[in-house]
Length: 401
Ligand code: LLP
Image 1 (cartoon, rainbow, N blue to C red):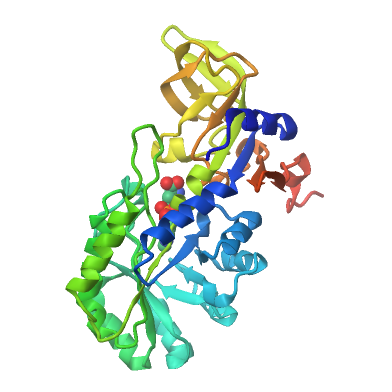
Image 2 (image 1 turned 180 degrees about the horizontal axis):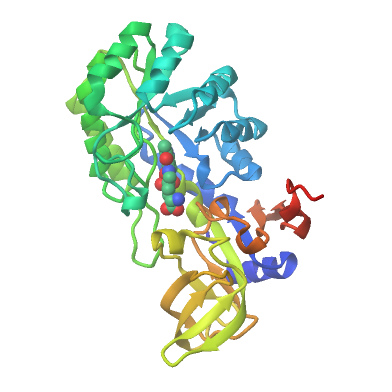
C-alpha cells in the first residue's frame, strides 16, 4: 500500500530534495474506508482542502467522488479549477469580512456562516433567497491538543449554541432558509463519542430549524502518526451515528443527511517529505542531524509538538542510534529529540511520514529559503505537480527600484 523505500529513493534521485511526495492510491483507500463504513447512512464527505490544496490533489479527490470543503474563497476558486461543481463545494467561513461571503454566494456554493454579525448582513442582503448553513460552537472539548481544539467554550469558532435565541431572532427577522447546521470540534479526535456529543447538542436545537436538510459534524478524524497509534474507528463511528439517529427519530420531522469534512484522514498518510542530511554535529550528550529542511517546510513538530515518524532510507539496516533531528533555519527547529534512527551519515536521505496534511500547505519562505517541489504518484505514474521554488520566486511582488 505505502510507497516503498526504493520508490522514495528513486524519486529523490530524480527530483532532488527536499521533496514532497503524495500517493494517490492512499487517498482513494482512505476515502473508501469512509464510504464503506457509512454505506448504510445518508452521508456526504467534503475534503477539507486546507490540509493540502495542490490542484492535482483536488482533481484526484474530485475523480473519486468526494466533495470539497473550503476555508477561503481562494480555496473555492481552486476547487472550481479542479472541476468541482458549486453544489459539491462547501465554504465554511471563520472570522471573515462579509464581502467574502457575498463572493461565495455569487459563486453558488454551500456556505456556513460563523458569526451573528455576518448572519445579520446575510439576512439583510439575501433574506430567504439563498439557503445557508450555520457554524455553531457546541462548547465541547475535542481534539489532540488545545491549538487544534475548536469547539470548546473559549473558542473563537462558530456562533455559541447558547446564543440560540439571538440566532432565531435573526433567522425569523429575515425569514432565513437554514439548510445546514455545522460544528467542528477539533483535529486528531480518536474518541468517537466526541462526535456523538456533538450530535446530541445539535439534536436539542434541530426542532427550531424547520427547513434543515443536513447536519455537518466537521472533520478531525485521527490518523496514526507513530507505531501503535490508532485511527478513528470509522465503523464504530458510523454505528454510533446511526444509533443516535434512531434514538432521536425525525427531530423536526424531516430526513437529515450527515456531512463530514475530513482533511487529515484523507491525505496525511499519503504524504512523504524527503530530505537529505547536511551536517552531523556531535555534542557530549546529543548527536545533531542537520537536514536540508526546517520549520519552513514542515512546521507541525515545532508548532504542535507533533510526532512524525522518520526513517533513514539510505541505511535501513544500520545500527540504531539516538539523534536530535534539526532543521537549517536560524531558529530552534527541532523535528525530533532523542529519536532512534539507523546510523546516519552526511548525505543520507531521511523520510518524514504523514507529511500530506498541513505539511506543504503550512510551509513558508522563512530565511528566504525556497519551498520544495511536489510529486504525485498515481496509477504507477509519477507526475511533478509543483516545481521547486527558484530564487526569482522570492522576489515576486517585491518592488525593486
Ligand atoms: N473542517 C473545519 C471547519 C476545519 O477547521 C478543519 C481543520 C477541518 C474540517 C479538517 O480537520 P482535519 O480532518 O484535517 O483534522 N494544522 C493542524 C490541524 C488544524 C486543522 C484546522 N481545521 C495540524 O497540522 O494538526
